[in-house]
Image 1 (tube, helix red, strand yellow):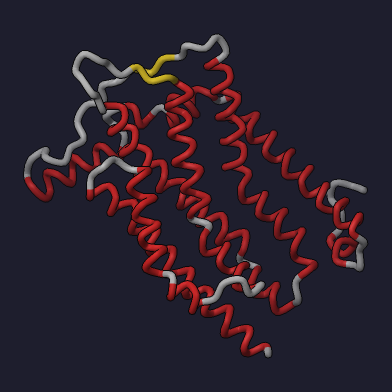
Image 2: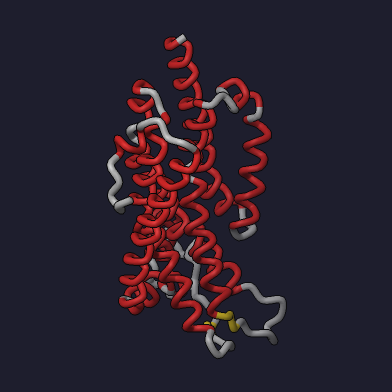
Length: 275
């Protein structure tokens, strides 16, 4: 079977093994896309590391400058300026920097290839949908990509700098200086950034769960208060222990939850119309 298998073959009556074969080629093409983008990220390591990944370590990062600007606009002083970052990045493993280079290349490859990955997912599930279902799901690639990139940006410009500043400067004693391992720093940035991108896919997930009848708007409304508590707990865990940071992180998650309720409601209405 060729890499660019025609969709009409997939859409025809297929056995279980035929479906597995179609899935295999979707996965192969997705892996090739990740490899190509990852290779570019590996080559341009100076841009990826110095310009992006390690940027939250420096005081001229946009988020830090924004807080200072906001401080002078609101209070005419530097009361909410985040100040200096007093820690040093080190690598203590022989292969630590090379391993970090490979890891970031793969993660960057996934992020850059994400629109194509969604398109491959859409090509695989599209033949199983009815025409009216395809009409409502046609925006999967666009909205899925938009929400993912919005989440990545939120994680990178909001959660990451707040976490880096707090944990990088936190000291139990002035006698103990912070020398943070490169892999630990990278893990924090990647987890908050990539994880935030996935969390922002909540409306897409709710859409498909509502389509198959696992959740509905009534259930989401009834569990709203419990969901809000969970959101606040998550925000408290991934941000410094101050109310401002928790509110900043919580608000977009509250909005996503309310949007998910609206989406589930529309799905339910469309089901009733079809019935």
